[in-house]
Image 1 (cartoon, one colour):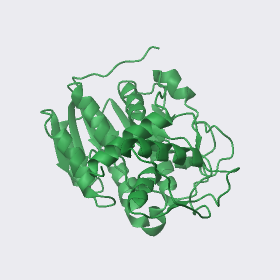
Image 2 (cartoon, rainbow, N blue to C red):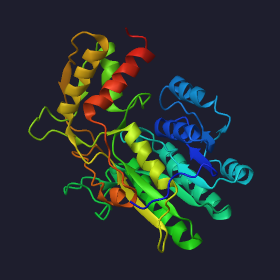
Image 3 (cartoon, helix red, strand yellow):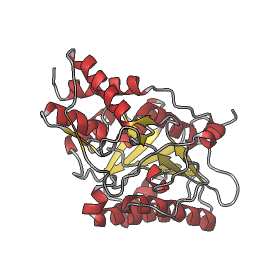
Image 4 (cartoon, rainbow, N blue to C red):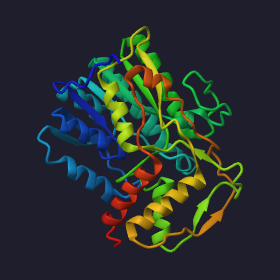
Length: 341
């Protein structure tokens, strides 16, 4: 496997540094002595306390600089590039969530389209060695062919969130072609773990359990045709990103898109069973969710399943964490963080 390892002499700009993936990536780079500039608008889409807890863990690192700012503000973005001259940019800031994009479309256009455009413009005027940006498995829409491969047709997104992510890939391709910006897009597949996003299903299920409420499962109670998800543990995701940072795509244009997932989809009901077991272990008592079955929601897709062959070929990425181990780490953190024991 011939790929370049991380270069600690470079400056890394991480957008969405108070977010789930942004926090873990910043921490990993700082642990290896890299200079990290983090930018985040710390919005209240989910619990701001959790975002502040993440940022507090990054503060002690001397080589960490935090900028509170919004990517939709072009002046802030340009100033950040001018003053810090990043060599590598990782754009993880985005308005996330499929269902929320139906309620509040404006923020998706601001954050995911205008914000990303401002990043591309900044990379154009202040050239970088590599731009890595977050796309999403949602671009595959209701693709019936599994596993999803990067070469699949992705022109039928079923949510505005997915449309914005597909737009990011097109915009990055164009800027790469016109201005020779080496860029890599990452299609993430259901990332989970400690300090994760409270709007994700696994986190919400834990919240509901402790609130004494039933969990809603959007599969009509159809266990034969249950929803499948490619759940990917946070440490595996960070390992994959880290390996890519010093390995921009070659060729013309210098733009590539990779799936970054577990390549091992689980039935949603299997995942829920594993979460019950993990909570049982964390609490030392039997845990069983009260389950309510409902029809699949608009914008949700029946299955996500990543082919990760291309990423493995490029940088030797292979997820290692089993669903049981990953969920155990999550529930141990959750019970401790919310002082439930």
